[in-house]
Picture 1 (tube, rainbow, N blue to C red):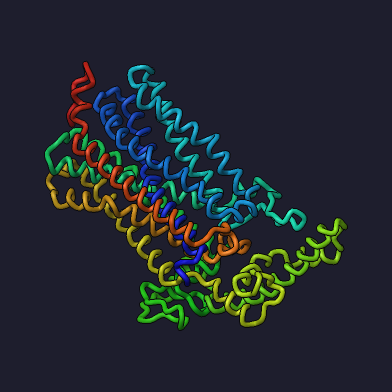
Picture 2: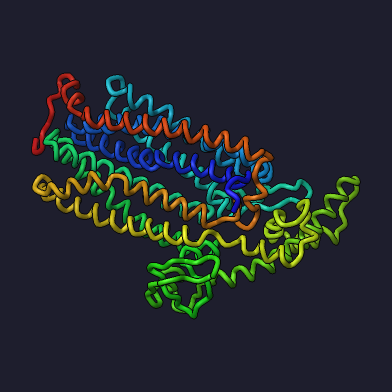
Amino acid sequence: MDFFDVVTLSRLQFAITALYHFIFVPLTLGLSMLLAVMETVYVATGRPIWRQITKFWGVLFGINFVLGVSTGIVMEFQFGMNWSYYSHYVGDIFGAPLAIEALMAFFMEATFIGLFFFGWDRLSKGGHLLCTWLVALGSNLSALWILIANGWMQNPEGSVFNPLTMRMEVDNFGAVLMNIVAQTKFLHTVSAGYVTASVFVIGVSSWYLLKGRVPEVAKRSIVLASSFGLIAAASVILVGDEAGYLTGQHQKMKLAAMEAHWTTEDAPADFVVAAFPDQEAGENHYAIKIPWVGGILVTRSLDGRITGINDLVNEAKDRIRSGITAYWALNAIRDARKAQRAPEQEDLDRFNEHSRDLGYGLLLKKYVPGGDIRGADDAAIEQAARDTVPPVAYVFWTFRIMVGLGFYLILFLLTFYIISAKNALEKRAWLLRLAVFSIPLPWIAAECGWMVAELGRQPWIIEGVLPTAVAVSNHTAESVQLTLAGFTAIYFVLLIVEVSLMVRAVRRGPELELAHDAGERPVFMGG
């Protein structure tokens, strides 16, 4: 791989933008929902301490929200800036969820977040609570529409390529919306966000207990966050299992890379606990396996098979040859249009027969002179088929890091739930210190999850439809290097600003809120 070509640089720039943006997304999703639950407790019980708790965590939510919005807008601009052919090719489909997200979700979220901060003394309790729930709803709807778009890229249902317009078009918008991959990704992502916020609240609250500050706020926050997070963590595991099963149905190469299965084994396949995948040799070194478990987990049966990477490469060769036939027919249709005559029915029929493999044919464009894949030889087909294998070692290990951290966080949340219910947290300083050091772990798990999702579907920007190398804008490598350096520098500064503001707000603590609410004396544990 040439790390200085336009495609790789554009991918790196989008990856940095997306991964940086996703630092803020999980906390926004989780804190928005936790704020709604906290304020609901305040309205239901009438205890002022819950108002003060809600206002304190709302400050941290607001800091995170601002930077999340700004980086999200920049990320969406990337599609037009670095991936203009992608935007042209699938804009009719991909653009709709993004537009709906802005109109339905973001505007609602941005509007009511103002009322959340400035409406405490201007709205009734019920009116302000409604605003808080609408902020949470808007945050989650934003995630839904973004993940509908991303889910379609992973599993492009409800769409068809039109040879007359040379673009992908929607033929069933309901199928785009109800795409099972998108819906599963949504549930998995928001549940992970809830876990992230819960661990964050527990970690910060544990720091307060270690410092002997605001125990009445810290203990209540831990009780609520641990119970909320434990439910969310269970959802992450259950929905993650469903996501793995769907990957085996719709993205077989990604699944094979996640499990480092180079050859198709007799069912049920082993589960590779750990190994050192060697992509060049097509094998694993020092593999530790558990018999049967892989096949049972992935296929949910004793006779289902996990197709190996090498067999999938051979299938890709056949699909590439079929894609060449589709490309021949497509060029004949295009030539007829240029000559202002109707395409031959034979060409239309041939294209319709092989159209599902057109994307595989486009994998050849980087290996043939001038990009005309009709002249591709067997060596080019072999190279293109090998390109359908993602970076196995990265996908394999990031998946295992994500899963390992997921199980750790379930144990972590369960422990805090049990001990906080017994009101025995202050007797376990080691556990409180562990909570502080565990704050980054949900973010690491989430970033690993996105690396599995996005690296695992390479070389496709749209699974089986459009190769990443074809979708890039017509830039020079130098121009992308310049913008990449600029984005990285700006994001580094913004990250410092974010962390500084969050740390300052945490150090200041909720004491000021406790003293500021005129006429409302702080209520302590048991009060």
